[in-house]
Structure formats: structure tokens, C-alpha cells
Image 1 (spheres, rainbow, N blue to C red):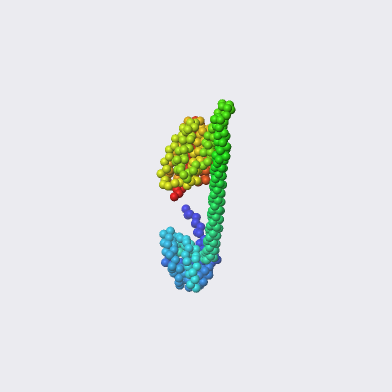
Image 2 (tube, rainbow, N blue to C red):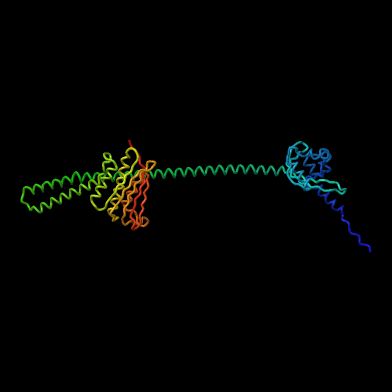
Length: 385
């Protein structure tokens, strides 16, 4: 039985299609041997290199590729191993000018079984120019962004500097107002103390002297006159105590420790509660008078708060020096205590806070209902000669 004849592929049709593609392609096409000999070049390749086909055949691959391009060796090695390769390599035209080209190459065998290579070459000079232009524009844009960012950062830093300066000025202004307020309070206390001592005290002393003369030389009701004399004596003593409380201690004549010890003694004499003073200052030299007065007033104010509100039978004053010329002050009692978060600070505590803030110190109130109260102050001090 005879088998029907199988139809043979129409090789001529495929060859015609390839020839049409070869002749009309806008990309250059070279047919070469694996060693680089150019066997044929299409019209586009001749136009790209500016040489006729016969001259291209004569110069071969080495005549159209830039030998300084190190990518050529890697390209040929890849094609040898894989049978195909793609990349970018610098080429040379007939006039010697160089241009970048995108090439694709594959190994094949012709009808006679000979190994050949096909190379498709695309001139990418314009594309590279556009890429370079875009790269330069990107560099300029990045430089502009960096410049604007730096300018923004500078403005932000300037704004922060101005904000800091304003905050410092406000703080200095607040300190100045606090200082003026403290000085005004001290001046008012001193003036009131002198007024009580120099005027009222002298008047009452005179009345006391007159009453004493009446007791000695007349027959006026002795009981009434004696009672008046005793009342006047009590008034004089109360005014003396008030004067000593209001007038700032002369800390230039006595030390802070001596002034505080006198304050503690006067509180203990009243027997409302017992005060203990622990004083440990290892700093050399005297502190500034204004700082000493501030410390004295803080302790005086807190002792007054304890007397009025704490119902404590004892209080402890602890003063000790800290490194970097700081002084730690603590005044503690064992009274009824309070919740600092719920109860707003009274005038006394606000006065203490204002005095401490004026010297850039810190204040902390530690208290709880039934647990007493502890006032802690950390204040920088300055020695004077």
C-alpha cells in the first residue's frame, strides 16, 4: 500500500518574507560569521554606518564596533553560551564618529548547515540624548528641591529661634514682674512694720506711761486702771511681734541659719506646734542677700500654712546644699494633708511658687489626705564675696 505524498513546506515563501523584512527594516541588520566577518548588510545598516555594503564587508565587525567599550566581550560571551544576546554597545560610523546602539544577536545555521549570526542594530543616539536631558532636568529639579528645602529649614530654624527668643523674653519679663512684686511686698512689709513700731507703738507706750502715773498718784478706780494698763501692755507686745514678722530680717548682719533659728524659736514659744530645724550648708561664702531673704520667706510662708491648715503638732525644716550651687529646702508636717490635684493652690503656695520661679528653681508639693504635707524646693544660689 502506497502512502500519500506529504506536502513540503514552501521555503521560497518564507525566504521572500525574510528578504522583504531584511530590505525594508528601519533597524540595521547584519549577517556575520561567528568570528565577526560581515557577510551582508541591509540598506538601513549602510545608512546607519554611512558606508556601502561592500566596505562594511571589508572592515568587518572590528571596523564598526568601538574597541574601548568593555561591554563587547561580555556580549559575545553571552551569545556564545546562550546562542543569543542583547545589550548596548558603542559603534563607529564611517566618518569615525561614535554612537550608542542597541543590538540583538542570535546564532543560526543556513541551508548549507554553516553557523551564522544575525545582528539587529538600532541607533539610540536620540533616545540617549533625551535620557541625558531628562537626567540633567532631574538633577536640576533635585538641586531646586534641595535649595527650597534648605530655605524652608532655614526659615523654620529662624522661626524656632524667634519663638525661643520670645519665650526667653517673656520669661525674663515674668521674672522681672515677679521680682518687682516681691520687692514691693517687702517694701510694703517694711513700711508697715516701721509704721507700727515708730508710731502706734510709741503712742501706746505713752498711754501706758500715763496710766502708770495715774496708778501711782491718784485715787482713780485701781481695778479699771490696772486692767487698762495690762491691756495696753498686751497690745504693745502683739504689735512688737507683728512688726518682727513683717519686717525682713537683717540678713546682712546675721546668717540665714541664725535668722531661721530665730523664726523657729518664735514659733516654738507660741506652742501651737513644734518645729525642728536641720541645716547643712557646705557651700563656701555667703549667699546673695535676696536669695537668703527668698528662702526665709518661703519657710515663713509654709510655717504659716501649717499653723492655719495642717492641725499638725510637729514640723521639720531641712536645708542642705547640692552640687552645682543648688540648695534643697524641705518643709514637712504630719497634719491632715490634702490632694494637690483636686485642691487649687492658695495664695501662700502661689507666693512660694512665684518666688522660686523668679530664681529658676523648682517646687513640688507632696501630700495626700491624712498623710501630711511636704514642700520640696530646689533653688540655684550664688555666693558673694
